[in-house]
Image 1 (spheres, one colour):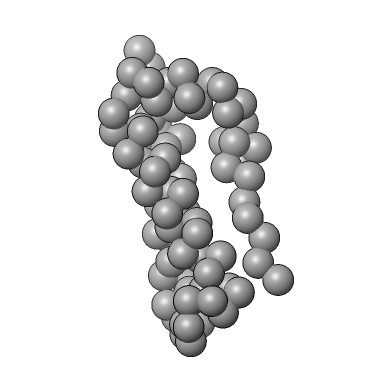
Image 2: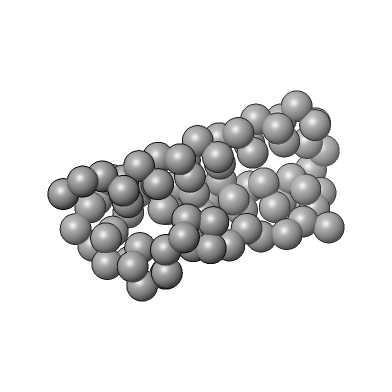
Length: 80
């Protein structure tokens, strides 16, 4: 059974903190949007609603999601 990840808990930031940062950072805002989309793709693949997704393709989706999350962390922790 697919489980949606709590991005904010994983990041160690509240939803409000991330929203405030993304207002002034277009790149962060785009990364958050990309993360939401790829997370939904992973959930669809895990649930089978995306059709027959191979284990290798699912692994690639998860790696892409992790890469985007890492970029989000970098944007949130950049010194001002």
